[in-house]
Length: 299
Image (cartoon, rainbow, N blue to C red; front, top):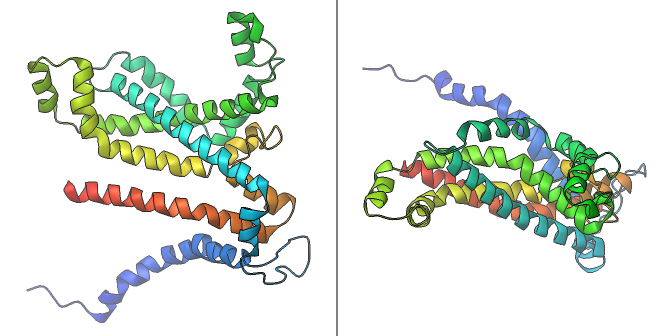
């Protein structure tokens, strides 16, 4: 008969986990609560009496009713999220099918996946900024050699082109990770179902649409939600590549929060906008957790 746990043994687990809980509270929970408090104040870091007067919901109403720049950054963020999630998922799935067991071009594509996966978004932003330089950029020279009429284009000075450059950089940086996730999902599909489709004479496209994709839906859902979360809070790529320009054509919500908080020292307003970003983040995180935990329980 095993010995009865003592009082010390019962509390030992709490003692062991306490340092981690304190670190999370100090680095995540406490700053979140403080930013929520600041969002109800007129707070400017440039003044010594920070935060200043309590103004309730005025920061939130100002964002919705009086600030067109907020709506512009919200539109840019939503458009950027929708496009990057679709393109990244599409290309990641295509590469995953090529890299799956028995897929063609496996070794070559695996080699190409190494570089983007190892680079930080800030470094990707700097690299793409130089590559799209109209004077000595790699892409400008490449496009100019193929189509001379598009040579010497100021890619980052045009609002539409600058937006698509950011989309291209983000998709390029995220494809490797999502490809690896989808490869794992493809490996979990029973081979018997694929072989049964082949025996029945189904074409490769029919097998993909009727067998592979339906069984890959839980993994695809996780990939889409995860990419949407990171796209909504994109900051470092935008900051290093265009800094929200030209004008505010590529200013995402995260960059808008930074711009108001650290350039204009309007911490109260930037905290309010940041908390408006929390709502979709919480919903997406909840959906992500439900999918992951449901998959684990089914396994």
